[in-house]
Image (cartoon, rainbow, N blue to C red; front, side, top):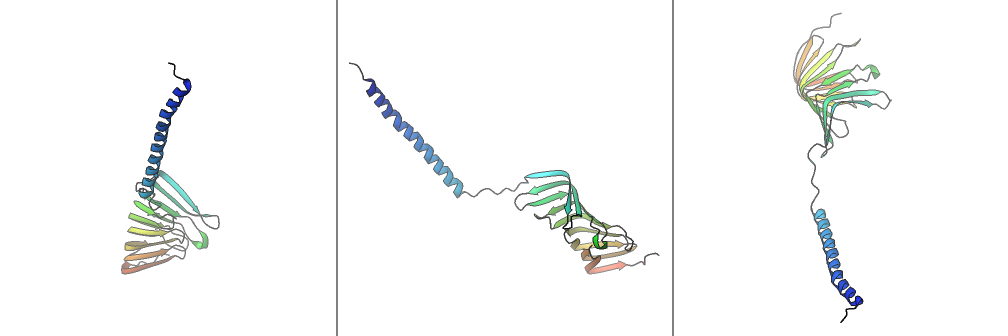
Length: 199
């Protein structure tokens, strides 16, 4: 007795169709469970730095189109969790000379910079130097911490500082130095020796 080709095909289709449906159903179920798991589980917050730059140099241009300050360092590392930066051996040069302002240089062992570059926290062996000008003596400030506000040309700290202006020396706790107005304020524990500038 001969088997009809149509019957053989029908039996093959009857066997293969449920297997294909079962495979597709399993894949669909796997995708549904995977997506549900991704939605239920919060994305892992990245805590490791995502990039770094060595021996960087950055110039900020002011509203007038002129260079406002120059920022450089040995290494800059980006922290993605708060979009801040860690800097090794930072150097900030205030190059603005408008309104009679002289240049000012701030150095430290390390620094952190916030996301919009408006606050630069300088740590360890912080040194601020302003060279002498035609109408002002050289100034050096030393501390273990300073906050630089580059847009305002202000440096301040709540830590002990030692300030040398010419041959005069001041020490105190807490300082605000405004390079734009050339004002210097000490908050407390102020002691000093004053020597009149030589003419």
